[in-house]
Length: 138
Image: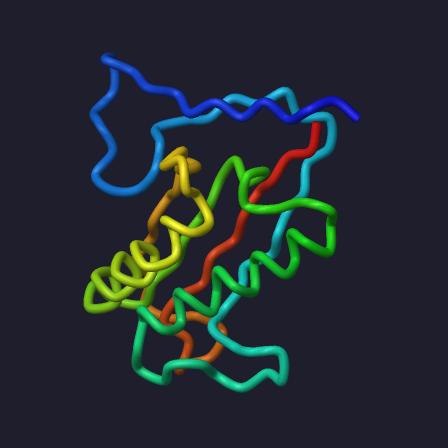
């Protein structure tokens, strides 16, 4: 199997990222993996971090990691995230949680693009963060 090439795109024709993400990413993908939106529940289905967007974010990334591993991939295969947070009050908690896990899952700082959406709610009231991902295998 060929090695996946995953390259962050930088541009002087677009504004610089406002956080830990790239404006774009190119890949030589042969297979794409679509990870459904993950929320802050553990393997037993129990909510992790009630009222705590940072704790839920950390759990969400753990869940995404589990799905990626089951597909024969890892975070170095991720080419895009889409993040949903409930209310503006959850944005900083999401950023804090992401900043805690990103140094471990992206040690080279090559962050995938991320679209962050502030929404009025998710499928259950107690969920504050949901993240979906797209990953690529060469």
